[in-house]
Each structure stands twice: as C-alpha cells, then as structure tokens.
Length: 102
Image (cartoon, rainbow, N blue to C red; front, side, top):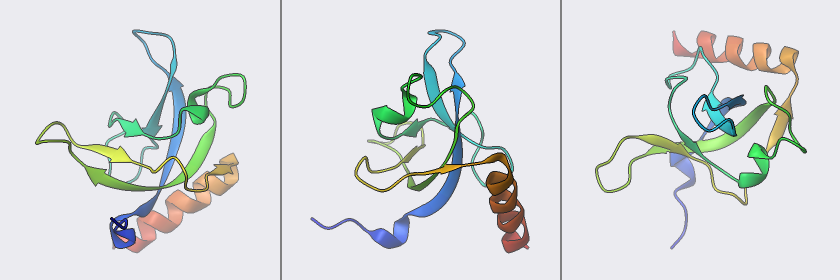
C-alpha cells in the first residue's frame, strides 16, 4: 500500500533528555501547530547521543496520527531523508511557519 504523501508535512523537531529515563526523545519545537510535549515516532538514529547530542534540531516529514484511538502523535517514516537544522535555519523555518498560518 502506498503512503499518502499529502498527509505528511514538514515539522521542526529537536532532541531533549527525558526526565524519567535520561535518554533522548524527539519533540516538536515550540511555535508550530503541535504541542512541544507531543510524542514523535521516528528513526532511532536521531535519538543516538553519540551521533546527535541533546538539543540537535531536525526537519522531518511527519504526519499526525493515532494508533487505534490512542493519544495522537507525529509519525515520520524511518526511510525519509532528515535534515539537521542550525539555530538560524530553525528560526527561519519557524518564522515562515508563523507567517503562513495567518
């Protein structure tokens, strides 16, 4: 079955340490349509602290979904390309997102 490419949109996310486990987790960056506390399911490589330290920003193609009526989360297919964002690139993306919402 083919993926619905229209359901995916660009989302800026970043890695943050999880308070309970201490491992990295991926969360949407503030200033978008998604809550910063929302769970993101993506490639495990993005949560590898040796490759990407805490605070690394990424641009993913993700879609909002829920599995069997559970809590909504963002899903990014593990085979899609991922772009690492600098602080300036992340600010520019979020500024363009805010302008596009009006």
